[in-house]
Image 1 (cartoon, one colour):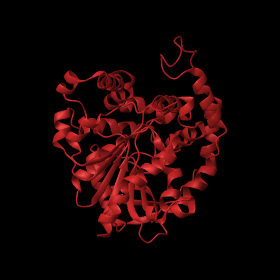
Image 2 (cartoon, rainbow, N blue to C red; image 1 turned 90 degrees about the horizontal axis):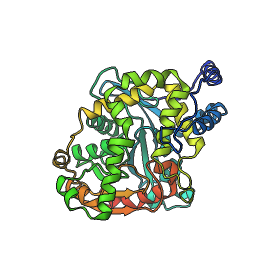
Image 3 (cartoon, rainbow, N blue to C red; image 1 turned 135 degrees about the horizontal axis):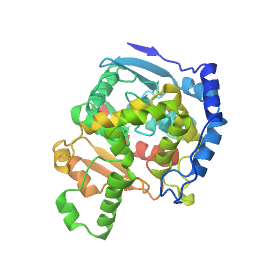
Length: 387
């Protein structure tokens, strides 16, 4: 059953957060500058100051104005935004986020995607939007059993789209959302008309490494650095999520530091690129994790996913996707993918667009670019749907 699910955090919880922020104990300053030892003290201090001044009730008002619902899917209550377009020819689109993000990554896109005319666009580019929170994220229920990985989540998303009356639709995702959207297209090729990704899930084979030119070698090095060095969050969260989870649920400063470091490190923070994720958006996102107590359940996602996800490029390539696929690549993405790797898995890539600015959080960093890329990608799908 689908039911409205307005959100509201009691005043007592807001006051308790203020008290915790006021009593924060911080460590000494780092002895190696420029994030050599992790998030710098000055950065965290600025983040906590912004959080102390954060207006959560204003975020609640924006959130509830969108149209928030909850449905039981495979035994778990999933929270989602659902906004139908006023345009009669709109097509359904499901957007899936990842970690350390949330559905808030797509907040500013909802109006332009559902009502393009009101935002200077064309009625021909309208979508009915479904934006679910991953299991254990946001206001979705926190799983109490193992097994909520991208594959199971994709099946739940298919069930959700059916419950909403959408037989055929298009899908977009980045980070874990790319895993879920890829799996959704693989499992439901007759229903998913097209797929748009900002982080295609594909890996180099040994022969790719052996034959790489200078440009490709640099991308491989960037990817390896992320996976085996800078991406230690994935190692920790995949191995000991419960231990880490205690500090993420109990300490506002601990949560802000863990999420804030990644919100900064995964973004394109160059001044000419806009400086990364705005501080106000970072605080919105961190506050959401705090009030929903999803610090532990969200990192546990890595534990489940790493026990499901194929660990080799060869295994990934066996899970091929044949639906029309459109990829937008941002230079600040810490998990770079080359087209020739992706083409082995995504057998029908129709567009591969490499942008000159932006990072992992396109909806926050470069929303106008992401909006245009989504519109461009799915125009051809409209003809198929109407046919």
